Length: 223
Image (cartoon, rainbow, N blue to C red; front, side):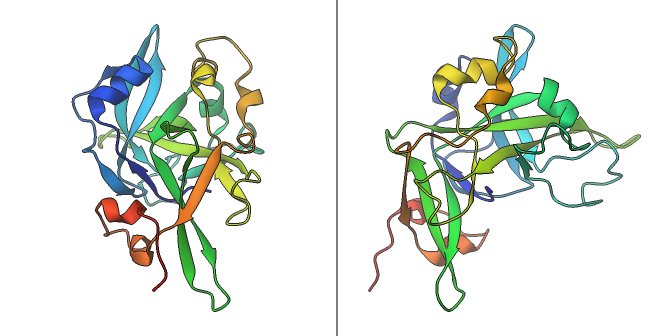
């Protein structure tokens, strides 16, 4: 799964990387503790144009009467995404890219304490996750553009920490996932190849969704 991540790339550099037109309401960067239900950076196709916009992290099915009307859907499992009523339409036609610098995952020690790890690409390039999105609105209410991260079984790089991971896409896969290169996006929903990722322990301060600052991603040293 993916429940927290960091974004450090400036908005203009992000727009250039994806050759996308940036919106005016992009989230502030850097953010070392991006949490569910907040606005996050998302790249999606709009006809022949790529756009970089902000979406609520927490997918809202059309039958929800309020954002808290059901489970918080921050992740969508690749194995069942095409059949789940909440996700299947978005999986077919509303796929997106979620750019990050890295994401957090947690293991537990022998006493049950949650130990956070920060996971990045070994080549130090942005870590781009596969996502799906959907517009949601109740009659007469505020319209929200919402999204979820697509997840799959963990690769050997990180399976010692957690058994799930985001689907991570390289630059040569972005167009296919966005639907710009025809069919075949389903073949991308698998774990990243071995030796794509690296990880290190970080301080337990990040266990709080109120924590902030670049020290959250620094390697933790036992004292």
